[in-house]
Amino acid sequence: MTKTTTALLATSLVASTLLADGVVLVQKTERDVTKLTPTSKAWEYVKATTIHLYPQTALVMNDKRANELNKNTKAKEARVKAIHDDKNIAFLLEWPDGTRSIQSGYKSDVYADGFAVQFPVNYKDPKKLPYIGMGSDGRPVVIHLQKAVEKIYEPNGNGDVSMQQNVLSKNAFGDSAVEFVQKVGALAVKDYQRSFVSEGFRSMTEIKDGSEKFDADMSYSDNVWRGTLTRPLKDSYLNLKGAFPVAFAVWDGARLNRDGQKLLSGWTAVKLVDSNGGEKLVAELTAAAKGDPEHGKELIEQNGCTGCHHISGLSAANYMAPGLDNVGGYSTSAYLRESLVDPNAVVVPGYNRNAHPSALWYNLDHGKRVSTMPPYPLDDKSLDDMVAYLKTLKSEVK
View 1 (cartoon, helix red, strand yellow):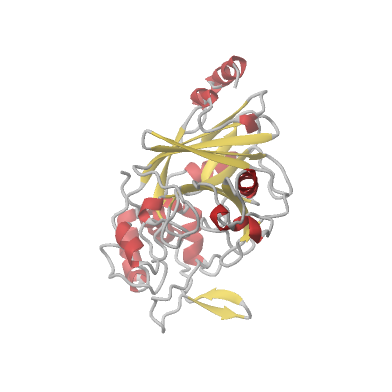
View 2 (cartoon, helix red, strand yellow; view 1 turned 60 degrees about the vertical axis):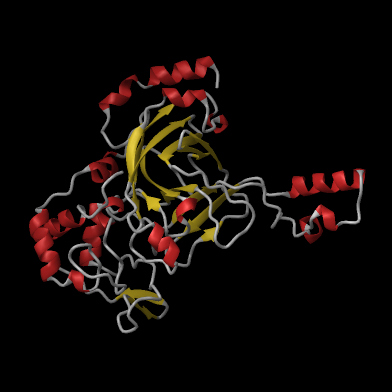
């Protein structure tokens, strides 16, 4: 970006100190933000917001080695920056990672570092945001995924299997061999970025029709990954205005992270500082949990929650219900309260094959998942206390 751009960014940050802590502040620039990369100088003039990324512990993977590698994983501190040009928005996510894992080719036991950015399609009611993992029934999300990969020759996207052969297996020499290598290079997948829409477990669908115009990139230096995402503020899927929620996730290839084995944030409020609206959402996502966590812990035990849910220090390891370690890190207070009074509102993906066969945590009723957890129609104070305790369940930040 030019010096004019960086000057505009520096000037526009003056008012940002007046806004709430814990909110990603999005300044406006007259320049095209789709040109920003992880190493663009202009990012130095954009205010950063600190977020925490917590280990996802609702489910236990069926991978002994991965489980061992991630047994004592701590939360990570990350930084988010954002800027918009009135048509597009750009995010920069920075997170520490002591190992640089680049995936080369398709292997079943080698995984890449990567990150994802998730947006709810509808965020009008901040108390009913989608499940943080992959959306929930009636509450869809759009997810952008970027992985660190080398050139991949298969698949090449054209279904041309002849271009997937090694040059040494071709009856070609000299200029013909060079031409073949150039063709393969032209067809190769040089980047791994995907966009999905999802509305709950087993509904994640890749958007392949070109309707989702976004771009992502990653850069690694000094044991830190920097990832950028640029996308329209408004398209056929999303209409981002005023203030809106965003969630972030990162994968560590060295720890065999993939799918649900990752670190993720909760819903984070993002505010366009030059736009009106969104105050209710910002207040909801930045408010501290009210209630007495010590009394809430007693109520959790008295109501039998630890008979199915695993909570370190309170219950033995089991697979009878989603694990609650770290649930306070990536769940909103409203989501936790809703889960207590209406467990069917959002049924967490599962059920893990290691679970006890007589203790399914949901059943199917005409194709719809129905939670086996009973509702807890307790008084407001008791619910506040239980939520306050659940919000304390999160790993320390490394």
